[in-house]
Amino acid sequence: MSKVAIVYHSGFGHTQALAEAVAAGARAVASTSVSLIPVAEAEARAAELDAADAIVFGSPTYMGGLSAEFARFKDWTSSRWMQGAWRNKLAAGFTVSASWNGDKHNTLYQLLTLAVQHGMIWIGLGLPPGNNSSTGSIADLNRLGASIGAMGQANADQGVEGIAASDFKTFEALGRRVAEATQRWHEAPQRLAA
Image (tube, rainbow, N blue to C red; front, side):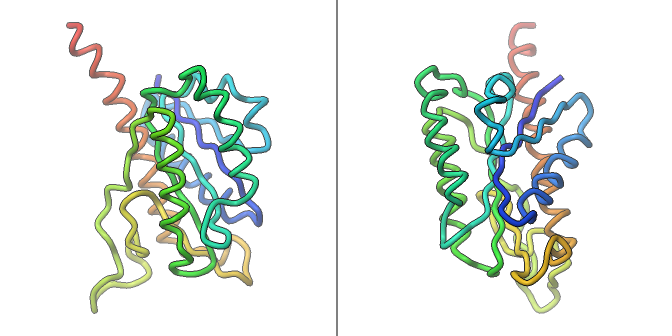
């Protein structure tokens, strides 16, 4: 059984809804256990993070970067770094903002940097960009064209209903990719030992 933890901050419910989509995608892969961990609970649930085979980081993009709450969690992880607790775990990330661009790449790079500081192995989205031709539409997977992680767009004047269905499917695809990679990562030492 491989273990995937999804640690996230959600200010208005959008990031939580997309974290749940990542979790649904990961759970769709047999023999995968998934933990959803809001950053406010991360310290109390540190043992779950330490026991995970993969950690997916999620933060809304506020003013072109991580939310303050996620940044506090990021700083807290230095205690895990000092112990090497997350070294060689798999990692991935996602973000959402109201703007189609909103400088979301900056948030994903901050999540990537956090992961590699810990000695983790980063997993990108692995989907081609959608909605980038005359025949494309917002119904395409990866409609915002990200590679480093999953990006979502949520209308500022709406709740979860302001997120496109294709974003939910894109985030599910990220969860599946992480779970599948985690299983391959687990199987490799067993194959080598055989």
